[in-house]
Image (cartoon, rainbow, N blue to C red; front, side):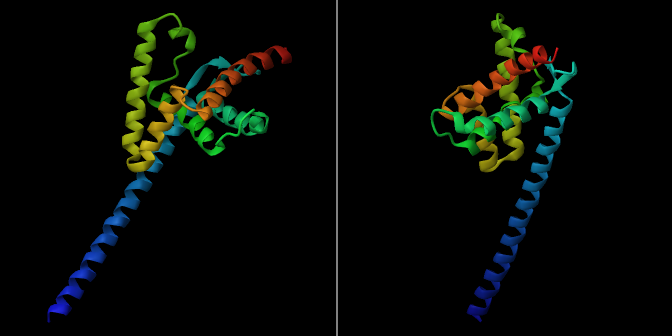
Length: 178
């Protein structure tokens, strides 16, 4: 009697729990696929810089080369770096531009209002990304983006430096090829 009901209820609970877990996994997968689709927008989002062949560079191309530079130059850094964390920062730091678009530094350099507007747009974008991914993953994206923006750790400082170096190298390569 009573044991059978308890056993039955436990089985029902486990079955429902399994369905909820599966539902959560499906939802997480859908959100991840939406994020990947969002990342595709970075292939179309053009930066205000040109490649050595004269073509405008996409945000995705810039991000890829910064990640490549991080891998290639890691052994030359004066201190050990958490390369996984640094690469995640590099990949995430421009993802906001899928929503906020690429605003060149020269547009905000001497314009406090434009700089503030850019930051507000990017914060709204990273909040959207955090909410899309949800849970720990969403929070990780959010935290890594802010860590990069504030140069809060050694990894963030190196990632920022590589981001700036990539822009310099692009100009350098254009002059070498010409």
